[in-house]
Image 1: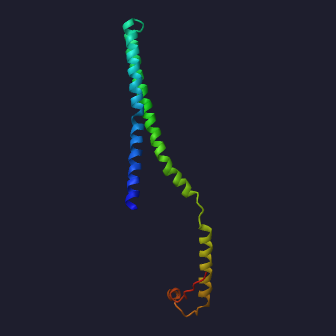
Image 2: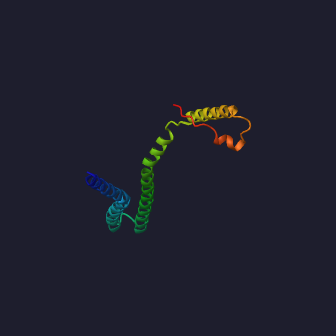
Image 3: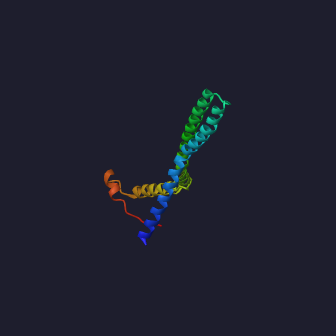
Amino acid sequence: SFDEDINEHNRICRKLLRIENNDLYFATWLTTIIVALYTGLGGMRVLAGHLPLGIFLTSRTIYLQIGKACGEIHHSLLAICHAFPGLQRIVFLMNLSTDHAKRMQLSLHCSELEDLIRSRMPDDVAHGERRDRLPIILEN
């Protein structure tokens, strides 16, 4: 029934929105995990004296900036992916065959018939009335 179809559509839309929401946060969470791991491991190396504090803090900031840039790239790629279905539909519709040639032939045929009928009208009919006096002819 119609209600079941609507409920199914809504269920699918909710599932799609959940997936899209997860996709949006993927890069952010990945950056957070990488920076957290580096903070833990790098912090232990700093405490052990194997890594200077300045290099550790600079590297951590670089990881954050790289993660942010990757997140923006990921967001842009998702926007491009969302545009593909509409673009595919437009390309499909633009590649359908047209009926311009048939319409042009029909228009030429109608003009020829109109000229033929006008040529058979008496000359005493005023120019404006000629169009009103054209007979209506239906053909297949």
